[in-house]
View (cartoon, rainbow, N blue to C red):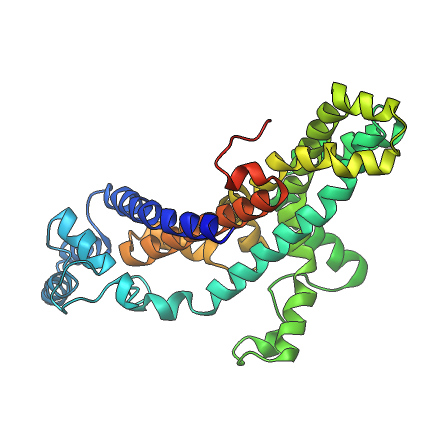
Length: 341
């Protein structure tokens, strides 16, 4: 297991490099950048005094170099005007839109984004696993039809619409406002147990809103996988030999049906980050989604590039976790064999 884990960790290095190059290429596709747009705006208004400062900043942050040079400097693989100072050295870059370092812009939002996504993934799997197993073992009954209907509703209702409905009814029925990830008095305070408790209390609504569609999808997937296994000959033969239904379910079909269910952990994380942008705006969540939208709109390369790379790292961590869990559930994964789907 240790050898398999090390192999997966080493495999993440070229994957991250490839992802970073692709991200940098995508954000570099639109012509210009944040500084050149500001320069064009100043020139259109006849203000030439500020253009010299912007030209200096373009040179200072190496925005006047070629694509490959800028990428290597951004990653910290090539010396720029300030020497080796990139992501590998802990320098996340400068945000020209907010006029401060990227670390200062994202700051606490990174930790809050991880907390929201981790809580949502736990919510999805904690709810989808028992419901999916229950629906599969009672297939084509009234309970299964009810779960199916609830799943379709969960997939059909847009999460931002659910967020708006909760905002309205919470105010109409209880006179309270749902929004943010903590009480206002903890917004600028350092981390403490009281602040963590406030965050956990405010997580309930965002986690339900963001994770509803993912939960419905996971329930349908586990139900389909388990139903397929329960109708295979080895299950029928084991049942004919008198093996107890509970032991039969846990020992073979459930384990074999979990592979696609677990493998989706890596796919869930980026979809949660991208799918929660509108919800974050509606519920005033201080996550990186709204910041990314502002950075892309302003062509703030360093800020948007870091956030997209952070999302890619989250995806790879999720894939690593799913691979390690799969290796524990199915030894053929770590032995290099292809598991039966």
